[in-house]
Length: 217
Ligand SMILES: [Fe+2]
Ligand SMILES: [Fe+2]
Image 1 (cartoon, rainbow, N blue to C red):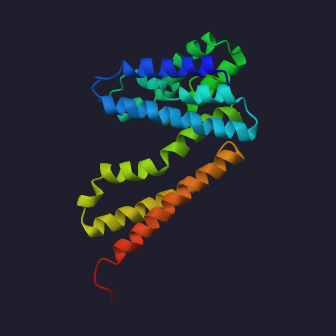
Image 2: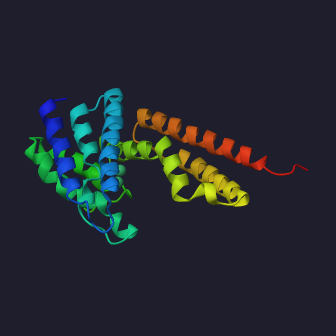
Image 3: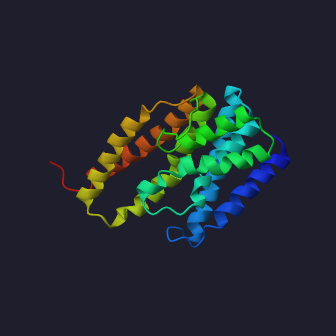
């Protein structure tokens, strides 16, 4: 990986996203989180690239900018699901400025465009490289931070026991479905199962513990 290219991509990400502090849907911490998440996704994508023989630098740069579409303000969650397609438009110009070929740029942009809902507004091919951008995003989104964040968001500790058990149960069922989600590479698939299996273990143990919190028949 060329240090100069990585530095430029990191600078672009930070500069552009920091401009969004103050948007109605953006606190300073949320913007910081988005930047931190982007670096983690780039790190995961690079690991996959290394194991699968993809260009590590190009993968790192593409994954680093996968959420660059958040430079726009979105009015609703439905609207924000366009951040992949919007991000591809913004990233395209930047990737070209780094000197990547048109075909390389298109593959990077296609991966960014489809990473949210598997839908692009331009023609492209779902190559393992392109799919890996969304795979790396999902791998980070299902790591331990989100277990904590999800429970905090739902104010889990304030819920009555019965609702806590229901919630753990729902999460277990959802994770079982998500576990079968198709990934673009064997390496991505392996990393995904490692994250989901940890969450399944966590929520199964949580449910088990909670179920012992009342009289037994
Ligand atoms: Fe995203
Ligand atoms: Fe993301």
